[in-house]
Length: 316
Figure (spheres, rainbow, N blue to C red):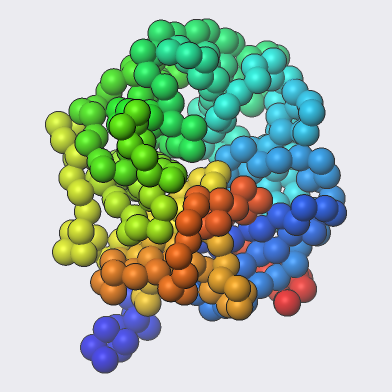
């Protein structure tokens, strides 16, 4: 009751919404995972395109069967084009909104034991590409995050790699190797292991999930000397929103604390599938066997729409 009374005066972050793309057509759904409401939004500009990355209200997209890559703001409908990307990339990300002077886009492909990286800034005429020795295999389900002038990705053997676009330097081992029982290797017979990276105010987090077992979360300490496994006592109100393309972190969200929210809505379409570390269980309590079940590729986390946009949308 004390916490309820404080909610009205507490300054809290806004939780992200889900943007869910339909397999056909240009209609997308915006879903509020807390208030159980959904809205339909028409985005004709997205025809025959896929989303590679999202942050700060912007989508980074590429045309299917094409080298065209572009930024798109789903609420202002603004489009910012980029040069054709010759690299057949595995992963792509950007540092900050494309309207910023220091925005940089990074596309990465991981051949065996190497990293081919293309970089581009909005307004450039072409991408700049270089290949670096890596000595590791990137985790095929790891996303990329940007933090403190570097892009980070996670490898299949538990190491963290980084790329500094300013100095064009690649480090395939920029933190101690993480020993987690969920990491697949030659001696691990688990059905599936998925990993997601997220950042928050200068800190890096990695989230593991294997089969229907509880997720495991680690935080890289600022000193970069060790990984710390997160527990119910150390979550301290943290909420993690995990998706196929991106992940978001928030703190002190009322009624969503100490939980991981996945981008899959439950079968009643009223709330997202989540895992509560306080209750040590999934909600709904179904045996979610694989990553695609929990994080479908056609959904991503996005900042909530502005009020003027929300008022013009069709409420489902």
